[in-house]
Length: 278
Figure 1 (cartoon, rainbow, N blue to C red):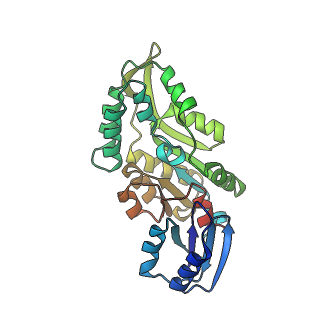
Figure 2: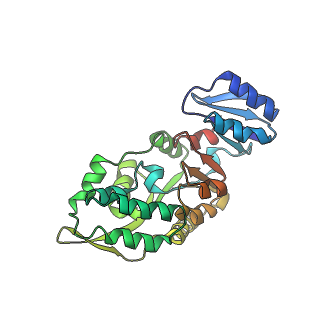
Figure 3: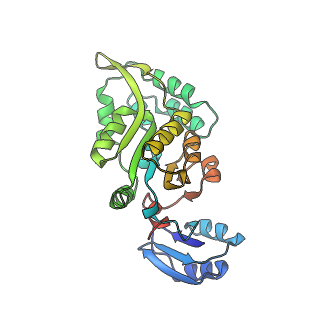
């Protein structure tokens, strides 16, 4: 078992040496500017607390697991691929961000059913001009750090990408085209006469729907669960993540970190690449 250590900055050699000693590693190698792989390691209870205390992300990775062995990466959108919760920023255009953000946070912690929380939040947007969606996309939406590096690596290995979101098609379709993603699914806001009606059209993409889209895409590509990576940050992603061989909690809520295969608490999305570097 290898131990992958990564950070947002250069890792001091004394920290790598300490982790090498704790894990009784046989060899160490630098796999990127801010990442190391310690090979043939043994678990140690102090490794987790040491890494967290020094703002290092870590993960035990089977020697045979490399990017080349995967065929599909499934990503949540809001606060995972991108830096914002789109609905919160749309609400800000109405001066309602605090009310909507409170519902968003409760849903992400798993305290409120997602479908109900979405209906309640969208209802608050009734009457908002459609142009607010484009303003959010143009002015506030940014990719999270490392997204381009991750997507380039996935493309290099022929790994398909699925963006599945409890957010909105307005954003997922633009990101799909911009980033050359293979598949995207999300909710559709009803718009009449250029204004939001406060309603969502069709079935809501909730936690179960996310999982179903993963399974549908995985089966269509004739992949096994162990060939799939799923990444998310909120409770609404847990069912989806459970359908993948590898799950990654990205800057996630505690309930998600606890259930994921790996947690990236500090580094960017390129942390996925470092975990499974060849």
